[in-house]
Image (cartoon, rainbow, N blue to C red; front, top):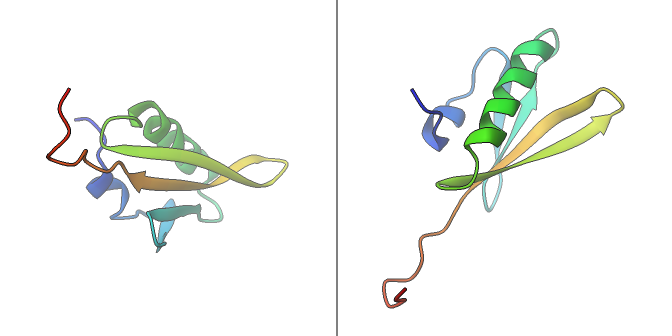
Length: 80
């Protein structure tokens, strides 16, 4: 089953969710580094159609937070 924004925003034992103005920050919980890293990699791979995932680092160990934001739908008056 493909990863989607709603699933990400539910949180899990591996990470918590803090809502921001234009998206949410998913933060790694202590003791769940491997599970968070796997989720972050999957989210970045799924990023692009419905949401954007941007890794954030707070230390030398790599990504400890992930900013996710829904991509806005184009206005209905745009034609392509």
